[in-house]
Image 1 (cartoon, rainbow, N blue to C red):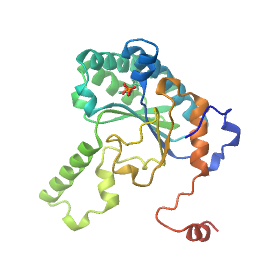
Image 2: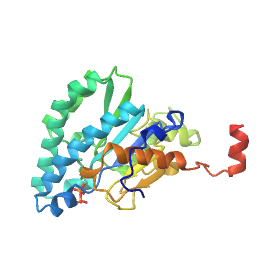
Image 3: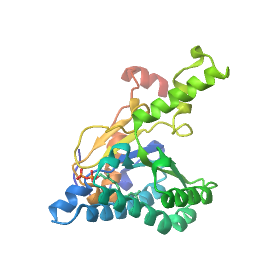
Length: 255
Ligand code: FPP
């Protein structure tokens, strides 16, 4: 946990930045409720935070930023809220395509994308194609995403490889299984940030999060600004990542 301390940018060690930061953007509804506004106003404000954090991540030199924008469970929200979220996503893609191109950011998406409305899917595909050659940062939107579904999908893909005689059950290891996930071409997240104080993964990158550092802040997503993002990165840099080893072993490895 951390508060609203002054910017941590100058204190950050650029050599020890996480390669992959993933964020569970939570608290839009509560942000709006506290202001006696409809929930959609919280999501609208949340889009502004998305833009600010994408810019910050790019400027700081983060290679992969993954944002949990819509879960498979979110389809169960009231129809009007789902439609508003799809509209916001569509507008974001239309408005930000040029910005992503200019900043050399590649757009990627993971999830059951076939469930998205046609107009959103077409726009997403176009921006992904247009930015495919960009190499400064990969921005992944998790849309209609569920971590358990992703694992089931990978298991099915491996089973069909076996049926086709292209793999044997004993070939399966963590690296092969990881490569079959929707995130197959990305490293696992080093850091997962969750806003709004909830202390759970909510079906986000459940396989990939095995050794991720978690930073949870009470701040609601619309109030999460660059300053707090940098504080989260600072907190990450203060952690000792042991991956099951002892501190002494790590010292020897890094000597
Ligand atoms: C969680 O807040 C947030 C979401 C379900 C949607 C996140 C979407 C955005 C930030 C905007 C669209 C995204 C992009 C990438 C353009 P909540 O509604 O669950 O908040 P609550 O827990 O306070 O009710």
